[in-house]
Image 1 (cartoon, rainbow, N blue to C red):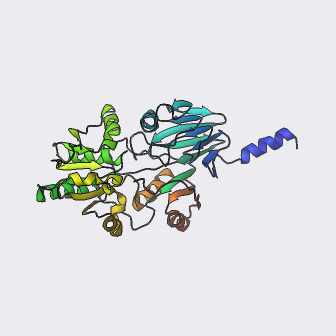
Image 2 (image 1 turned 90 degrees about the vertical axis):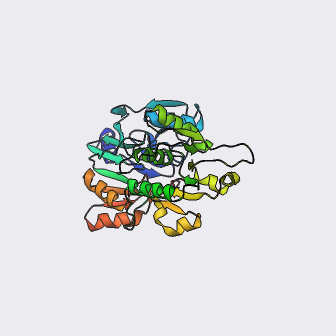
Image 3 (image 1 turned 45 degrees about the vertical axis):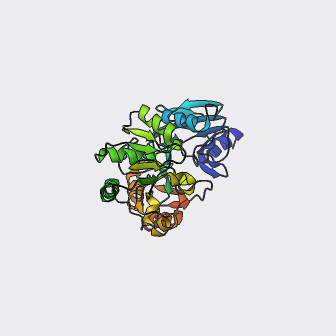
Length: 342
């Protein structure tokens, strides 16, 4: 056997993706997907901080994710950037970005080469979200799925039902401001958009940490209605019915500017009553931007994947479900990704 033939055989056997300490790596393409450390070339699924980090030599992502990274990290977050548009050839593979339904600009990344397609989901959700493009199932040979809510107990209610509970609380306690904890990217804008869809047209006050990202969503055509800053002169109480802030603000003196507030929190983790109690949440709103157990299962079946890789979340339960249904599966046990950034 010649050296050229040996090299050709090695290339044929080389996997499209392989786990590394930096994250998933594509040897044929020479890039990482959502790396947790600075690398030469990174493909980024979405703008949450556990997936999108500054310091890479080059970044390929959707236009909206690139904009969001610049908002969060500054224009110099990478040496060079490229917008994902259609199929893109990178060395010996082709990549294409497909909507993930998680947050504005979020995408699954399909990597194709040597007659095989691997789809890396990043974080994704199947429930309709007025603040971003809907999830698009992508047929593939290997599906790399998140498992944030990868236990059968997690079954998210319709978000409209949770907003109805919020509207009922507003009616029941008209003199108490409702303070809603929501992550700055995605969750806050989704809650605001859902409130507008439910008919709430009054002003919504937002913490300063949300301002730039809300402004960007509005510029991208997401209708958020009348938004006002949740600021007051020193010593004065703010007269507001709905206030949205990042969860970290609730541990600060910032909360003291509101009279007898109803503390609410929008998260899939609010289905766990102990978490709500620990946070002092009076009105838990089970609104998640991740797939629950039924949607994880549905998505695996929709892709028609012959093999499933499971990452960042409750990996073992989903691997077990795949085994019971004769679908080869493996946990990746990648570190550096949060269950749900808060």
